[in-house]
Image 1: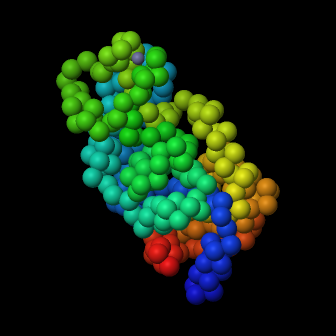
Image 2 (image 1 turned 90 degrees about the vertical axis):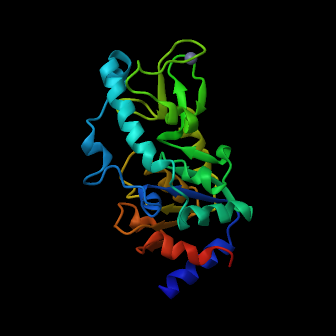
Length: 248
Ligand SMILES: [Zn+2]
């Protein structure tokens, strides 16, 4: 462990364009259940596909009730040590950007500016109109959401409102994908933390970074399919490991 920590410290010190890539593992330490895991929120509510959401008020109600349950755990959640680590890199001017698979908004809450974050699967912090694309903060909106009334529509155009996260059957945002690719191909150190690196296209970014000449570090408890390409693999609890590199 000491040797790995020393190697990681050297990599941090010799890098100036660092990109972070985070998955569910960084959020479970903030008390947010991995919603894919057993007993997770996907088991209590059947998934609603985007076309069903658009077509059927009852499906919309089901989806909003799932979002309401999720919001109850997201709203009080605070950034954990891994979030603080990436914020520390930002504050010291070494973070080019952060790509995340998480929808909980904890990197924004840690203090990293929203324009430096690519939320591959969207964000729970925003509500979007499916017609005009207008967005508003989820905070406030979710607190007043009344599911005994008709599902909410846009005040500007009457279009359907939805949490600005990627639904089942919804394509990822093309602009976000190209921003993530730009970041991955132009960094000198790519740190993948708390992701199993199996979901596509997310798992291609560490590969792009590595092929563009960046140093690749993977920090996660389980093995990943990209471990053999990494310059350093750390199989330790994230927060415990990363908190040692804040304010050194
Ligand atoms: Zn609208």
